[in-house]
Image: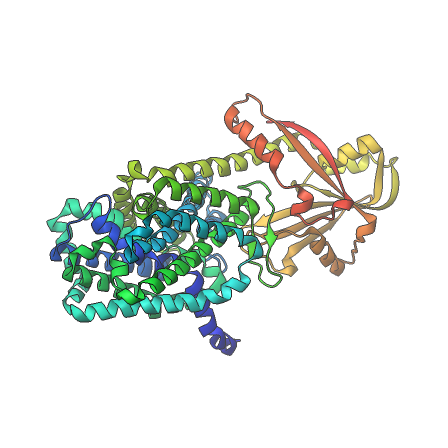
Length: 621
């Protein structure tokens, strides 16, 4: 096993470079340009250039190398990373209800911020690459937005075909991208090696002390150099901790630092190159290929974020934060390759609106930082809980380590907060909308469960009352979210048809606070009297439920299910919002609309539609 892992390490590492580092790898396109030429421009002087370069490289070290790679990547949920995986990990151990409630809200808001981030990343990345056409010739400027929209439209339209085939090219293309980043930077550094003095943290410290106001404004754009750092943690489950760390320290980080310092060396020699320092690094004959390669790299970065949004959507559904939605598996081999149509087209409309509304990458940069810094801030708070609840660190150590990370995150967040009027309002607005949707669904489902529990009757009382009921051949499966009591669909069926099948199975699909559940723990079967059985099927939050597949596994308990002799009974609730104080009228109506438009249980659980009977239930919440 160990030798196989070592044998596959190069391939896994190259694949990780293609998927994990796309976002942070395209930051050199716009980061320094925005710092010196954005909404709060820093004067292009040798002192400022060295100070900013020092801030950039030490921000990368502090936020990516130390915080995410060295510390947060240790907080995996059985190999998986990301805000929701971290949320599941922490809430499982949080015994205090109030603490659990706070942690849950933080995790949900981090997921909401991710949706805002996944809208901005394709817009700013592709737009910044296509803007390279303006460097080739200014006459191409009117075509930048149409070409950007064309590329983005193509990107979202191919999502339904899956990323497996295209994904084979991601790694080699991004390896070439980072290689060229490093080479261009190194060649420019050779003309002005003095720029490497900025590797000393004293230059950053001197700039901050000498120009505190400018340094604070600069932080709002310096963060652009670390956008995508959180992806190292989010995508950890796909590639593993070691290949990501190897790729980061061995290849990606050196390439990024070389490129930023190359841009700095160029600005020291030619301050007028600030209009687009990245593209000015390339010789004139290489401009067109560089624009093409940059566009390809930004498409790959966007693809990784879109795939991440699909994954977060599935996790949210499984964890009861979103209603059931259609999830299409685009690969018969890879569980993680999925397509969520609703998420795809929602993102597409938002990205198109961003490109048309903000018009250039500089305007979008003002909106970008707030989502990233907000996510990083929440990740720090959640990992502080991990340090206490899971790792059992000394409180003084937690205060020191988490406190330093928190101070850095708050500084970056505050610097981006001043950009709220300039575009920072967009990710906040999107996050608030997403947060409202996620919490409304979560709260609404709890109220529905409480209401159905009130209408239910104990199983023992029911079994004692059905001695005279006529039984017919076959198997009836009643899907129910409750693990106790009699499902409403069963009561409705008995009331209207006045018969019961000879075998009745009450099936509950349960999501566990782990990414995956092994097959031996998947099924819990509890026989009862009168031909009744209760079956609990467990799935991890990274898995998609498949009820017929789970029924096949019941063979090991001696139970077989013939689909042609089995009828599935599903309860379809019609939600009627009340004026009760449990739910505001607006959120009640929102929940009712979401319930009405949720994907049918038969499609979501992969139940054959010709074997399904739906029984309606009206609930007032």
